[in-house]
Image (cartoon, rainbow, N blue to C red; front, side, top):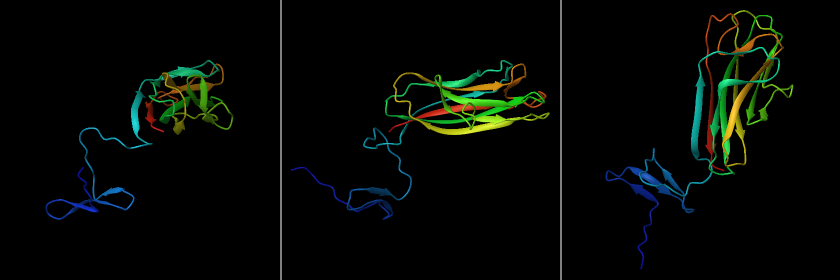
Length: 187
C-alpha cells in the first residue's frame, strides 16, 4: 500500500507555520517560497522568455513616410502559438523647431498593432518648440498566434523635408534613450 501524507498546517521545528492547505487541495505559503529542481503543474501566466533592447544613439528621418527606427526593434520566437507577447516600450521623439508634427507607430512584423486616433500613429502631435522631446510609452498584450520569429519595431513619420527622430531634443542639446522589451507569456 502506498503511503499517504495528510496535513492542513505544515510547520517548521519551532512551530512556525510554513504552509497550510484547504479542503480543495490549495496550498498557501506563509512567506516566500523557494523551490529547487523542476517545478511543474503551474498553468497560464508564466513568463517563458524576455527579449529587450535599449537605443541610446540618435535616429533622424526626413522622408515624409513611415520609416523604421534603426536599432529600436526586437525579435522573439514564441514557444507556443497560444502564447501572448507583452510589449513594454518607450520611444523619445523630436521634430526640428516648427515641424508640423511627428507620429510613431508600433508594428508586429509589417502589421500596425498600436496606432492613435489617426489610425497611423500611436503619437501624433503638432509643432515642436526648441529643446523639446516627446515620450511615447506603451504596454500592449499581443496574440501573434505563431511559433515563427516575430519582430516588434517602431516607425516614425513627419512632414516630408522636415527632420524628425528619436533620442535627442530639437536643438541637439540633450540626449535621451528609447527601449523595447517583449515577454512571452504562457496562455
